[in-house]
Every structure is written in structure tokens, then in C-alpha cells.
Image (cartoon, rainbow over all chains, first blue to last red; front, top):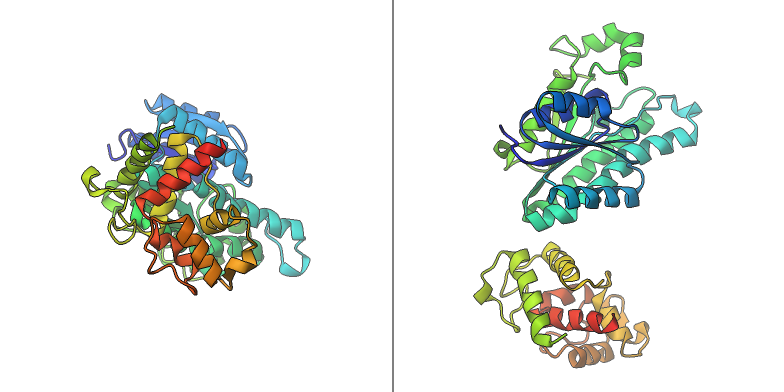
Length: 244
Length: 132
């Protein structure tokens, strides 16, 4: 077991990539805190049925004070926090000229401020422990952009910059900070893109298939493991060679 | 609380934060020069001291906190981020534990933490404990 007795928080763990990441980390022995706006009972049930340990906590990543309370709750219960996966994210695609300000704000607040809030909430504990893994879920859109995704691409580009800077700040305390930039992954969130332009998307992927959440979870597992101790401040693309 | 007790708590925080040996830490040890601290380590030490003594140490300019307790205006002691002659004099009086040679007019207040010694943290903790 690569993560025996490690304590991991995964945000946005009720479904999609977050759920698969949580199940994957738990299968390697991590105790999971599944955090989401909605309850994560299904995720917790799957983990427990497989013999793992998990709890579901409801919280809004856009609220720093909520995240700080949750971090304290986790420390009180498990006495440490080893891994944080900042996965919670939303999309509100729309053309720039017609995008309501609130759609831009919501996406940036959830994806980028959410990453800041959760990281800030756990960083002190990881500093005390002199160990920790922070793994942010970015996107190929962070560097390639995407039609109708000014809000999403901006939030994910922000995550890349945040990742590099936080990695430098926390390195002396042996806390690593990395980001994974998935390409087009088959989830509920990407269904619409795939429905509209599957052929175009496929032409951009040399490996000629969409990614699946396990492709991302496997990279999260690697970054969370001891094998990745010397990797920090990196943006790792898991995108089938995407040429956007 | 006795100063000795505060010193022991501060020393423990420093040993844990910096991963140094207990016998390397003395009241006069400079955090940066003698114990190899970096800027993040100071925050680590502050957090640990707060936890140990149940106090809150003000962020963002310990020097302002120290100087404001002297009853002088900030603009008389710090100009464009550097100490005035009066500011340097006040800080030398207030912080006799730091290297007075370095604490002169023109010294950048941002660099003040590089002069901190173990005793500086004992004094800060003591000040906050007394406020409590």
C-alpha cells in the first residue's frame, strides 16, 4: 500500500474525477476526507465496501473560514493532513461578449479561490509536520485556452501560477505542490464539449481516445506517493498528447 | 508565567521548527545566522509559540508593534521602509538583545527579522502573555 495511514482530503469528491481520485487514494490505504458542496455518501460507501476508511464533509471551497474549520476538524479527528487534492471546479462556458460577469466570477472563485482557500487552510499543519502533498487539478485550457472558456482558462492558468509559487514557498518544509493538467476527460462536466465536437476533439488527441478519470487518479496517486518526493512546482499534462 | 518557562516553550518551538539540536539553541542565538532559519521558519516559530501559550502574535510588522508601544508616530521612526535615526535608537532600546551595530538609521524594516534572536521571541511571547 503506497499511502498506508496517510490522511487525504479530496475536494469535489461526490462525483466525476474527484470521486475516482478519492477511491483510488483510499485503495492504497489513505484515510479519505471527501469534501463537496453535496454529500459524498456514494463515494464513502464505495470506499468502505472495498475495506477503506472515508468520511464525507460538506463545505463550500469559496469560503476560507469554512475550509479552516474543516481543516481543524480533520486535525482533531485524524491528527494530521498528508495530502490535499484541490479538485473542486465548475464550468460556465460562454462567449466572452455575452458572458455574464457572475459566470466569470463564479468560475474563478470556485476554481482558483477554492484552491487558495483549501491550501491556506492545510498549509500550517503540513508545515508543522514537515511533510505534505498538495495536488491541484488544472487543465490543458490553462495554457491552450478554449473557445467559450475565458473564465475557466483564466482560473486554471491562475492555478498554474499559484502552484509554482506555493511550491517555492513551502519547499523548505518538505511540502510539495504540483498541478495536473488533464486534457478532455470523459465526465459529466465534459459531456457537452464531446457531444458538440467529438471529431474535432479527437483530431487533437494523438492517442486517439478521450481520457478517463483513472488516468488522472493514477497521476494523483503517483504525486502523493513517496516516489514523487523530488517533484514540486510542476504542471503535469495528462492529455493524450493534446495539440489544442 | 516565569520567564524561564516562557524561554523553554520558545526554545522547544524553535527546535521543532528548525529541526536543530536542543543544545544549539541559546538565548543569544541569531535565528538566521546561527540557526539557519529562512523567512518561512519565522512564521512556523510564531505559529508554534501561539499554540504553546494560547496567544496571538500580530502579523505584518512586529517592529511597528514594538515602536507603537513607545508612543511615537510611525512616520517619525520609519520612512520609506527604512528606520530613521530616532527609529533605530528606539529599537536599540527596545531590543537590546539584537546586534546594535546593525540597527542603524537606514536599516530596512523588512530585514529586521534577520536580526532576531531566541530572546526576541521570548520577549514577544512575554509581551503577548502579559496582555492576555
